Image (cartoon, rainbow, N blue to C red; front, side, top):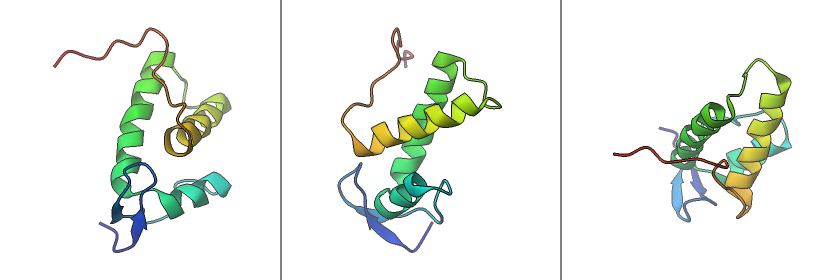
Length: 91
């Protein structure tokens, strides 16, 4: 776990931050400064669902753009929504 603490924008409390920016652009820097490791891990699980629902090809540059769009939505807006037709798995 990182010794660096952040006031996590997603979870609303001070938590250990990421060890490094997740992307080498302004969005990556913004996430690094404002998102906890726990919230990032939650986003990665959310994005796995997006990959499966949209059947994204991760070798296609379009997947990178979708990743960045979803990260921006998930952390910095109230518009993060599940894909159309998504049905949560039964537990």
